[in-house]
Image (cartoon, rainbow, N blue to C red; front, side, top):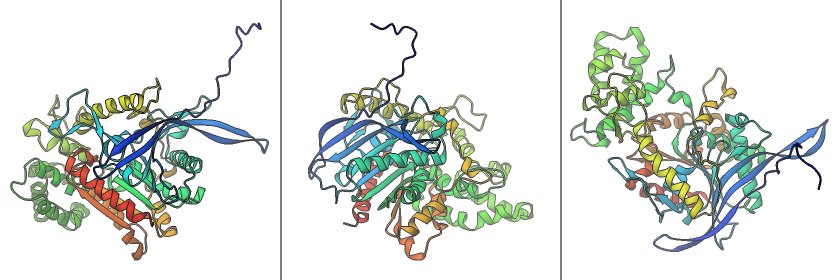
Length: 487
């Protein structure tokens, strides 16, 4: 036997490790027999040495979970590719919260379920209308760069779009789905990715989509980034502040509809005009602006005046219920939490995120091993802080991040591309009024504006945590996919 002591051993080349299992889902009106396929697929890059082809080398292993209806005709059966945002988030939220055939039992604001939580069949799953492929971008879930690659090379705007686009191309090709109606669904930063992907898939792979599903959208960061000299976010967040104040009883017996109509009118005209005046604003107009802003948001006139009529969002979430010794959630202003220091204008954590994290993490780690039968000892990165912190927007140096140009170009090139936007009134991360502002400024001909539909829910960023919203949203998405499939 040869003595190999001290020799460097070459690690085996990574390979796909997909596992398939069979399941049945009862939707109330029908039983769906479906196959779940989960695991990691290897992405490869073409290598040229001295101008000559030198092979396809592995560059990343991307984790996905696909659900396909047994016996369906791939020529007519839609498929939806879904992911969340972060950047640095896995797809667990849309997977187990809204779209997939199983859903987490997390509870909701004021009525959270205790650990160890649970899972239930999702009778409203979009699987009744579309096959589903949930993708975890590199650095999230079980997805990792290979040994020869730098993880940071995938943690950036363009590189992320390219790698997720390659997963979509691979899955579509290997499963014979090029003639299937195709949809992309993203949440939060996932909508930024989705907007870029719509154009990327068309230009790089010739893949034209039937529809985009944008949940809690952020297509132009200028609409919500509080930066010096940018007054727009102060305007776009105002109706959300009013909605959150209403939820916590600061508008008496007024309806939410009435409060939002008042807030939107102020945000459309008088408030941005007042901010634009700067030092030219008269004392009388300033006093009137401060008084109306305070009445809408539930803050004191003194506070609004002291911050120069410009309330940054986390400052609002920590100030609104300060007299009750509570902070409200950023992802969902219906949630409240306790903070050890009520003298500051920040918090230890977002109470909405903290409330939901445990349930989704426990549910997926159980589900992937015991029901999907996929073994992997890596930690499943639900939210990867290191990925988030390493994220690069180098493509937007000296500019703000936006994909409005890419989405507009994709819709102009593909006039059949339909867009469904879901917004929560209590979403303090991607406010609905900011989304409306951005959509109104898309560069589209008048006839293509009818391709965009917007749905609203009385909940937050993950509006599906609110059971009435989850049921309504499921119906809305089913209607959208059916209509946009062109079959």
